Image (cartoon, rainbow, N blue to C red; front, side, top):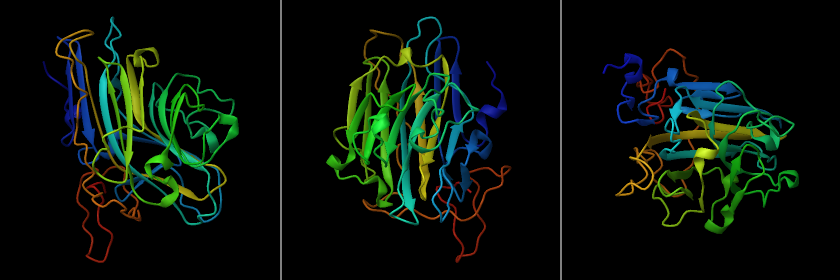
Length: 314
C-alpha cells in the first residue's frame, strides 16, 4: 500500500499497518520539521529549543503548549487494546529571578489539539473551573505547592488524569532532583500495554535510573481515545520561570493483543539527548527565533561567535 509523502517528510518514520491492526509512531527532535509541531499560547521555538513560557524580567502568569501535529493511535479499534509507548525528554526550568517561583510543565496525552488551559497551577492543562472539557493523561513536574490541588510539595512529579489533582505523586528531592536548579533534567515515561504498568524515571544523567520514581498499574485504554495528541504544556504562576524542552523522542507500537506470548517490551526510540552528557549540565540559551518554513533539522549558517543550532533544531 502507498503512503502520502508528507508522512515521510525529512526522515520522520511513521508506519501504519492496517492489515494487522498495528500502528507504529517514532520521532525525535533530530527528525522533525517545524510543520510537525503545533505551538499554542506562549510556546515558541527558538534555536532548537521549545520554550513553553515567556522570557520576561517581571513576574507574570501565562501558559504555553506544544504538540506533535499528527495524531497517534493509542487504542486498537474494536478491542480498545492500548498501545505501548516510550518517551524521553530533556527539560530545564530557568529563572532570571530565583526568588520568583511558581509554575511547572507536563508531558500530556490529549484528544484536543487546539485548546490550551489556564496559567498558574492549572499548568495549561485545564481551565479555571478545573476541567479540560475532554479527557487527558499527563505527567506533571511542579515547582509550587498548591494546597488547592493537594500538591505534596514544591518539587514533585505527579500523574494526572482529567485534572491537576495528581492521583500518584513522587517527591523529587528523594532522588536529589531540584526542578528549580536550572540544570537540565531528563525523564523517561514508559507504558507497557500488555502488563498495564506505567513508569516515570527522572535523572540529571543521560542514564536511566534502575528504579523509576513512579511505577503503578494503569488501564490506559480507559482514559484515551483511539487517537490522541502528544506533547507538553507549561505555565507560570506570578513568576519569571522559563520552562524549556531541549530534547524529545517518542515511540509507540502495539503487540499482537492481550495475553500474547512473548509479552512485548515497551518500544524504544532514540532515547538519548546528544547534548546532555554531564550530570549538572547548564541549559543552553535560546536566542534566535525560527522561521515556520524552515525544517527543524536544517543546519544553522552562523559565524563561530554566533549561537549554533541546538539538537539540529533551528
